[in-house]
Amino acid sequence: MISLNPSGFACSYNESAIANLKHDNGGKKEFSANRSRRGRFYNVMSCLHFSDPLKTFWTFTIKDQQTNFEVTDGFYSGQFQKLLEGLTRRYKRARPNGLKNFVWVSESQQRGNIHFHLVTSSNFLSVNFIQAYWNTLVNQDSKNSVDVQFIDQKSIRNISGYFAKYMSKSQDKNYQGNGQKDRVIFCRSFGYSRNFKIYDKLSVHRNELLLEFPELEEKKVTKKISEDISIDYYFLDNKKVMNLLKYVDDLSAKPLGLSKSTQ
Image (tube, rainbow, N blue to C red; front, side, top):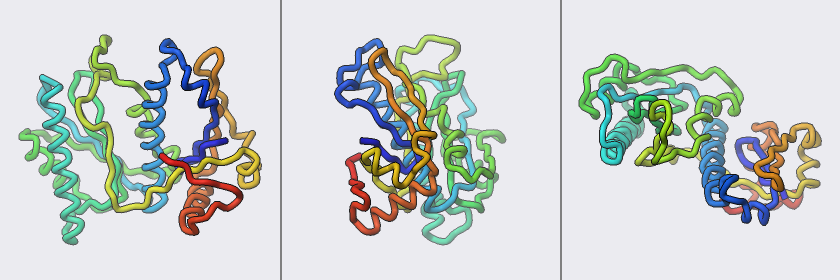
């Protein structure tokens, strides 16, 4: 069976072999956690872009050097949530600088400070307003604490590239290296608004998937994760995949033998 995800990525692997994955190759628990975190992130991003195309990419930073990460990560994450809640209320009240749909992630900088990235489908947000709001919440005076870029890519795979590096590493509490960019974050790693539909992934037999995607084998990339285990990845047309998932969801049916799987 092949797991077909909203992001357009599909994969096939031997579940019993993964269950016996040795610690030297990541171990089943770590492999599953990383794959689940990244997969959920890509799926949420894809569903948002399908519902309401993404427009802007924001970064929120802390001016002062952060200390006692186990305490201050939670504080800054809480203030960031207050920012999102405040902007969401503005949208519901039809006020300027309101925020409707978004996805965010947190990560650490080279110097150790936590910062946040946000993508949203909202067009009309004042950078000056957002920056003043953020500075007030974290009690700082900074003219460079908020940065925004416009997203012009139409492909969700390109858009996801903005965030891919933030979800690809397993953060280590005992990280020792050049700087602290890969230190563990003591708060949630990502989140999203609840105003758009998130579609389930599907478990599909390879022959059935070939009926919908005849180019399936041409899109396959095989990655070895140990001497005995490999994973087949398929990179399919995201829009076509999303339309298929929507069709299955709308009809609450199982066309072509497709069946919903649990997340």
